[in-house]
Image (cartoon, rainbow, N blue to C red; front, top):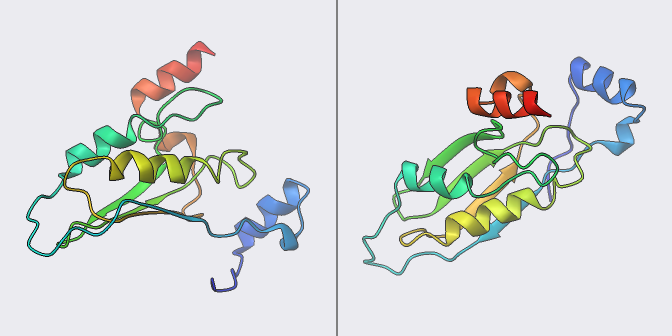
Length: 143
């Protein structure tokens, strides 16, 4: 069970501005892929390998990868080979919010030396266009 989400004043205002009530608060979403490495398995992925894998996952509406969009907030490489990733989406109403985390988990889990991969959607801090890489900002300007 997830804990009940307590909204900040800013979140309440945002949901109200979007025409949503507090009963429509986005729920936490966690995606899993891969499996724990066997005892004694010393293979480990690097942060750079994880980032490269995340760059293969694109937002299907704008075809920019989730890393350059600035959707990935945290990558935790654990000593046992498991990987925990916190990411967000551009909006609480994002139609692919339930798809992108699983795609990210699957992409990272496919790396040799990756253990169990957990990708969690987080809502704080809220995503802004400032999170995007310069390359992604340039691509958005082309639209």
